[in-house]
Length: 303
Length: 101
Image 1 (spheres, each protein chain N blue to C red):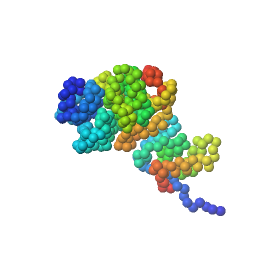
Image 2: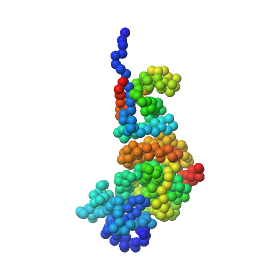
Image 3: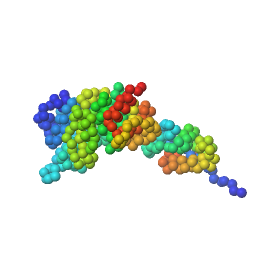
Image 4: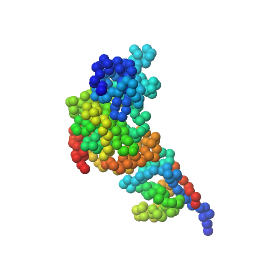
């Protein structure tokens, strides 16, 4: 069963009652909320995701809820609860769905230590995965959103999950978080991008989420082996070009983008080294998304 | 006339079983026992490789002699300066320690 199989009323009742056990790749999250923006966001962005039985196992138990006090009515705020405790400060109610998304990212990056986890987008084509690690504001999500509308499969916009033993990347196809100017860029780039409402004045500026492509969600069980690591950077007016980047420096940059390498100890170092060994590493400065897609299509054609 | 009465310090890798390292394009990335990861410049990479490969601790003189050819057009003294700087940094990072003479 997928989310879209539930009539809206039943979806709302499930979220308000026992919780929706939502499967995203290898992760099942039990989500509870009575907040309409959460309901609307899940109905829109997760419509094709599988759901598990009410009694099934869940890796994470989360809730987006209003405070019990008068703040429910005055400048309303919301809490994100993890196992009944709020790990973060509350946010304005308008940010309900982004808050859920950020909370889900935190659940995975802070707890799924069976994987080496990097702050990176991952897309796949022809069975080979392209890892796009980068700090916020680099154009990573914009490039990721553009590529998944030009023939690449979305594995993740935010978290690269690497299996240390197999070196496979595990899909976690969830909504793509677009910020500020990139929202209109993607709207113009792919008319069918499936963008949700724009939420303004978040800590990241204006945010809108893009629905993950149906094919990417349906193929969430198909892992991919990494082939390229590319450090993207948006620079207005630049003609996109790939520049080979030394593996030693790629290792260090990747380490900076790792959430949990310390939990993996020496074996984590070895796994990262194997990842670097098997990948070609590049820096990519781009100023036009369509031209960038052309560059990556050519890369995918190479042996 | 003065005679050196002190034995030169000989250096070795701290807990070799706990150190991990890889070399790409002439630069070594090393993981110290503490878990910190460091990118070494090409000369420091040569120094660490000698220490890793050596079955016994090495003095800075021995390291300098072995690496003199790697410092283009340099004299032994220049190589020694670079070795000293590398060893000082490695010790600060907990990668090397004085071994038995």
